[in-house]
Length: 168
Length: 289
Image (cartoon, rainbow over all chains, first blue to last red):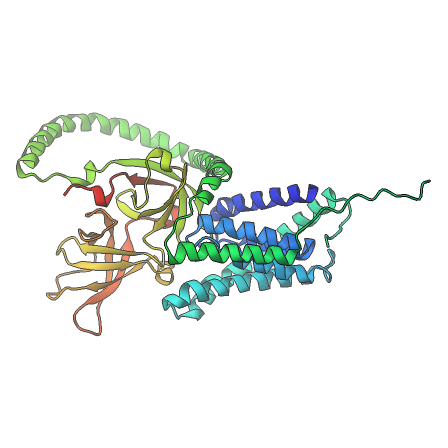
C-alpha cells in the first residue's frame, strides 16, 4: 500500500513537471524526457511489475497531452519499464554505471521507435538530421537530468521504505 | 508458544505477465480505435481535466507571476522615463484623435456602403493561456486553460497577435489541445494575399528549427509572387477561416515539374514564446458567407 501511494505520487509529480516546468527549462527547444527516466528507474529499482505499471501510466499521460493515438506511448513505455525490470537483480544502488546505461538505452529506444513509426512512415527519410538535432540533444539532456532524478528517487525510497528492498 | 502460527492469508495477485498481456491488448485496442476508426475516447481528457490540469494551471500561474516580477524590476527605470515622455505625447495625440474619430465615422459609413465588412475584427474571440507543452520534442502541441465549459469546440482556430497559431484538436472539460501549423503533421491550405494564388503550407520539424515552414503547390505562372508577400488562409480550407495571416514568403523556387513553385514561409507568430493565445469562437463550417 505504501509502495502504491509512493509510486502514484511520484508518477503524478513527474507528469506535471514534464508538461510544464521542463518546457520552461528547454534548451534550444529541446526538453528532457523525465518520464522515460522515471519508467526505467521504476523498472530496475522496483522490479518488472512496478516498472510496467509506471510505464503504462506515464505513456498514457503523454498520449493525452501529445498528438499520438491513445495507447501508443502507453505501449512503448510499458514495454521499456517491463524490460528494465529484468535488470533489477543485477542492480546495486551504489553503482552508477548500470542505471545510466539503462536510461540511455531506454531513451534511445523510445526516440528511434518514435522516429520510425511516426516520421519514417510519413516519408521523412533524413535520419541523420533527426538524430543530430533531436534524438542526440534530447539524450544528452535526459541523461544529465537523470542523475538528479535517480538520486532523488534513491534517497526518497531509502527514506520511505527504510531499507532498500526490491519487490519480487 | 503454540505451534500453530497464524499465517496471514496470501492476497491473490494476478501475475505480472498476465498484466502485461492485458495492458498491451488494451493499448493496441485503443490505438486501433483512435487511429483506424477515428473513434474519440473522451474519458482520459475528462479525468486529466480534473486531476492534472488544475496543477498545470497553478504552475503556469506561478511561472507567469515570476516572469512578470522579473520583467517589472528590469523595466522600472525605463518605464518612469518613458512615462514622462508618453504623458507629453498623450496631450498632442488627444487633439489628433478628435479629428481621426471624425474620419473613422466617415470611413465606416463608406464601408457599409461598399459592403466591405472587415471580417477580421468581427470574429468572436476568447483569450486563453498556454498551460502545458506537448508530450515531447517531436510534436508542436500545447494545452490551453479553456475547454468545453468555455464554449471551445474541436477545429476552432487559434491565433496569437495577428497570426494563425493552429487549431483545437481535442477538447476536455476545462482544457483543450492545440495543434500548431508548424507541426510536422499539419497542412493548411493558404493563398498569397496580393495575387490570390493558392498554396499548401506544410509544417516541418526540420525547417522549423531555422524558423521557417515549407509551402508547396503554388501555381504562379506570371511570376507575380515575390519574397515578403503575405500568406493568409484560403477560402477553400475546410477548417481554417479565410483571411487569417499565416506568414510571409521568404524563399521561392520553381518545382521540377515547371508548373508549381515551393519554398519557405516565415511564420507571423513567435512559436517559441507563446503564453497567451486567442481562440476564434466562430467555426468555419458555421461561418456565414
